[in-house]
Length: 277
Image (cartoon, helix red, strand yellow):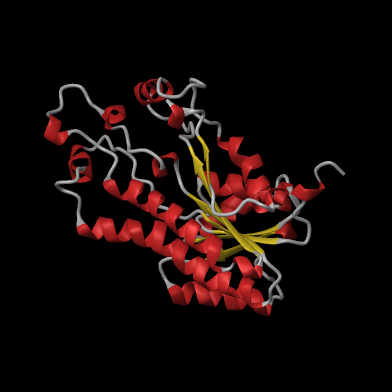
């Protein structure tokens, strides 16, 4: 069969931050390829809503929900132990959890996003979720994959901001002094760039145990953003539009399956061409 290498039948995939917009899309992609998918996030209410949505297209027993805080090693170990007790081996880990700071209409929050005013508490919180969380999940679930030599896949969800700096012109507000203009904070770029470094490290660390690690760097996804922002951003993209939420599904399927069996340590940028201009 032409696409047999894309099959994830009998595979178990765990996604962090799975109740968010792209987390659900990643889950859909893996379910579509035949995997059993474990959705993890900090809110059971949001996880149940995500499961309900996915189960309109897939069997309920193929979607499992677990509350898990990626900043807590004890939480992650607890989930890992629960899965082992349920005879579920994680074959695919998708490190998707992140805090994506959005430019706010609230002036105080706009000012707080600027480097001069950005709080250490926010720096630590956002790095703990987006970068330290990926490290901890890779450490715990990756170690289990490596222990039995059956191989596995770790996929880190980065961003096009892993390869270039935020263009702060996208967020400019007319009539606002420069020192009060909203900006994309430093944390997001640092985290996503850090994930690429982690990807390269993991790609070599457990390679003898058959574990591959790659990163996906998506571009901006249209989700009802302000018209001015959308116009500014699309002018930077050769395809002249933002991504639809479902346009990363096939890339997820490729990177998590044997279709990419010789790809390791790479950052796959899917951004409509923005990074080449």
